[in-house]
Length: 433
Image 1: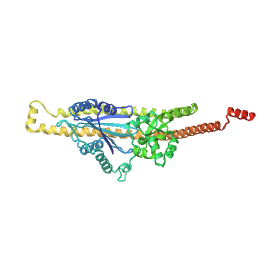
Image 2: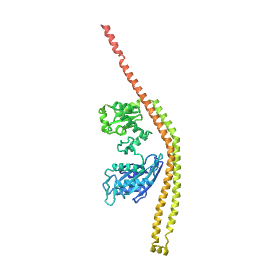
Image 3: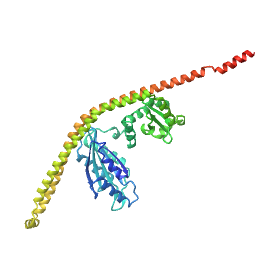
Image 4: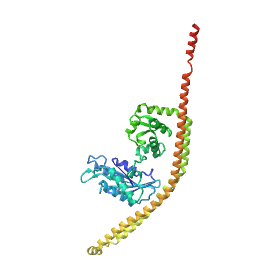
């Protein structure tokens, strides 16, 4: 499992993000442990209140646990991974919450701990937590027998498709998968050896270089969206400065945006709108099927939860009935029978809880397999749409270049035309002579 963690504040925003069921097919709070409150908002407010007695600003530690795409993982496996991370990070016994997310036929988990030790009233130091999580990720892959991803191999090269929340939101505004954009920038950077080559490579995909105000070299797309080259190409800012040693020679963002706005004609905008409308129409049936499947799965889970709750109530009442009251109960206490019954009830309660968890896992895994079948169609459509967008970008770029060449040619032709006033003056001088 890939483990990615961060220290953070903003408990209210984090709780809202974890409970967001708009961008996820299913959301389930699996555990809230060690807090007085039994809901996320209350738990994170409690952590913030305790942290106010210290100088710690980032009072939470958030960890995402992502198994491989095609692997079915039970809640117990997620809990074991959370326990192992807790031990490795030195957070044993700290209040924590676990939330499960499902999207596109995959399930992952988020674990959030309070970093504040209430006994010492200080924040637990999480030194080198990234290295510890990387090592633990590798151990989990090996333990489960899964092939190691590139980022966890000994000779690993960083995954160029990692993106931050800001990058994800920026890409979503344009309706494009951010992984697609990152791959474009990364490929163009790797196959170019000069500023001009990189500029031409990006232009083939509809991104045009400019001089940014504080972000160094940036790129602008046909919609006026600005992308930091260092961030989206996943390279260091130092490398960008070295390649673009004369970045001041690049046109400004305002200049490039103005040129694009003028150059993209109404007809080209119509082409772009037509492609967007066609792609939206092609996505609509699959989106409807996805939404219907999501509702069906939620209904099935609700029915299972109701049945399990009813059975749990009946079993709890049956266990309680085993403990006799009155004189008989007193006799059971004296003889030790009551203690034996309570221990038996505790074991049975634990086994019943695990049984319910296994039933939930079985239902979820079956539903995720159904979801993956639909997701394969969605992925195929996304791939085709990505190719269409690249083709359109190249067509628009070609049209822009043709327009620029025509303007240049017109300018040179105007320079070659003789000045009429100058010709008249020449004729006048000749006559005087």
